[in-house]
Image (cartoon, rainbow, N blue to C red; front, top):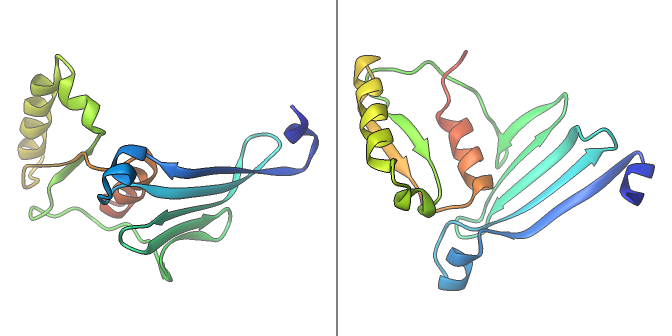
Length: 136
């Protein structure tokens, strides 16, 4: 509770998703955030260690991949629908049902099928989802 007495506090996850780290495979990251006392993120950094690439965002300034600002674009027929999940989702009893529904939805909306990414942790998945997100 002492962190809520300060104006802001640091949250650090030194290894987001340990299995790839242990296996020396891509997919793990270092995550650091500065959060104000009400829980609003002020600054966030995700470092994709294997790719030696950082993603960062600052409240009121924007989001970046390396030194490049992240911009959202319009999806085209050449874009797939992206589904990011961890490997444990593969064991879910309804996985195949959901996969088929997402594939059908992608095709029905004119996208180029479904692209599944399941080899990383939540922080990298969030970064990659932002990169593949269409403008709203």
